[in-house]
Image (cartoon, rainbow, N blue to C red; front, side, top):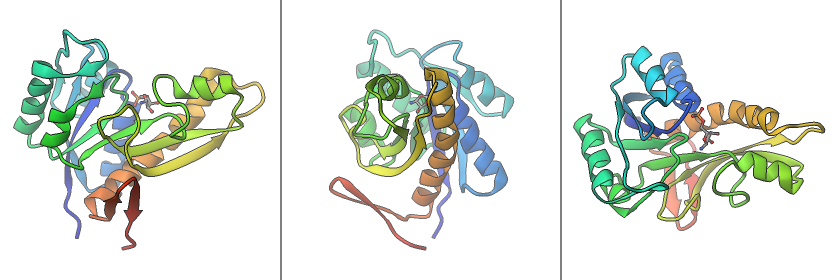
Length: 207
Ligand code: GRF
C-alpha cells in the first residue's frame, strides 16, 4: 500500500536533488509532497528553487557548530520540520552530520544521498576522492542515515565510468545525473513500504 511521503529536504547548496524529487512528484513517479526545504546557508540556491515551486523555504542557523547539527539547533530543525507535518527527511547536499535526536524524531525515515559508491570515499567531495584515487568506476549511494558519517544501510547505488580526461566537474556532473534517478527511486520504494532494514542490509520487497 502506498502512503505518500511528507518530505522535509535539508540542503546547503544547489538543490538539484530536491529538484529531481519535485520533478518525479510532478511526473507521477513519486508519491510524495515536499512540505518544506531548510538550509543552513542563508543564500543556498536550494531555497530559491523551493520558493519558485511554492514550497516553504527556511534558512535556519545551525550555529555554533560547523560540521554537525546538534543541541538547540537540532531541536529547532526538528520542531520546524514537524510543524510542516514532515514524516520523512531527505538530506540533499546537507553538509552536516545529524545526531541522535533528529534520528529518533524520524525513526528509519532519514535518508541521504552521497556522491560515491559507499563504503568507498565517505565525507566531502566523494567524486574528487574517487578521481584522485584512480578509481575506474564511481557513482552515488542513497542510504538510511545512522549516527556515523555516510555509514547507514544502503538502499540503492548507481555506477558511472570514470573517463580519461575527467575533471572533478565532469565526473561530478555524470554522477549527479544518476543521483537524480536514484533518490526519487529510493523514496518511492519507501512510500510503497517496500524497504525493510535487516541489520546492515536493506531488503527491497517486490511489489
Ligand atoms: C550531491 O552531489 C550529493 O550527493 C552531495 O552533495 C551534492 C548536492 O547537490 N551530498 P545538490 O545540492 O542536490 O545539487
